[in-house]
Amino acid sequence: MTGLKTGVYFLNLATGEEQQTLKVVIIE
Image 1 (spheres, helix red, strand yellow):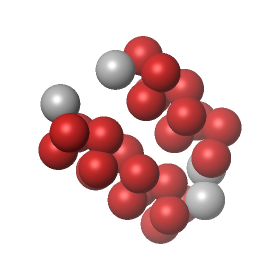
Image 2 (cartoon, helix red, strand yellow):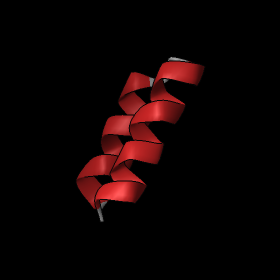
Image 3 (spheres, rainbow, N blue to C red):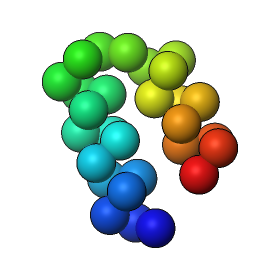
Image 4 (cartoon, rainbow, N blue to C red):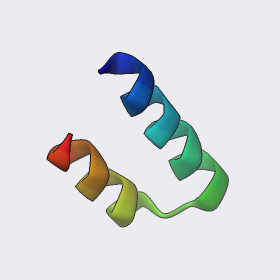
């Protein structure tokens, strides 16, 4: 699911919530 990961990384850059984004990436 590369598209989903890319979207999550993009949200991370926009919100700056690194920890939360990393958690989502690990779950995926």
